[in-house]
Length: 174
Image (cartoon, rainbow, N blue to C red; front, top):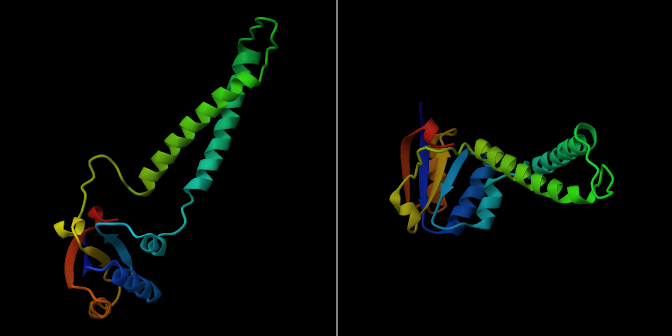
């Protein structure tokens, strides 16, 4: 399924940041920004706070509880061994195991959730609006949810070098 998009080409990232702030105030639907370098102000204006760190804490707590329960069950209930006069349940040796398993599981779940949320998967076809993106141009890709003439006028006001209207396959841009 194709959808109409307007792409504004900028040569200065300060103009791009000003344009994005204005377009966000007008509730324009900005799909993505492509460019040769990153700008932290640009990233901050386009993204929202991620809930991934909160989910990682919950996964870590659940992993610690599950690992502790498993270690307790195997060392005390299922197969109790008393060796060297030590008690059946000794917590200090389990700390290392708890720590390492928590890091392993939390890291794996976080990576899987990130890849699922951003819809990145092996074999996904990358979409780049123009080869000049990696050289010296910034591309602002917008959905045409407004009057296209108004979007074009706004982009020209903020110094877009060229404006491209195109059909983009929905699966190629998210």
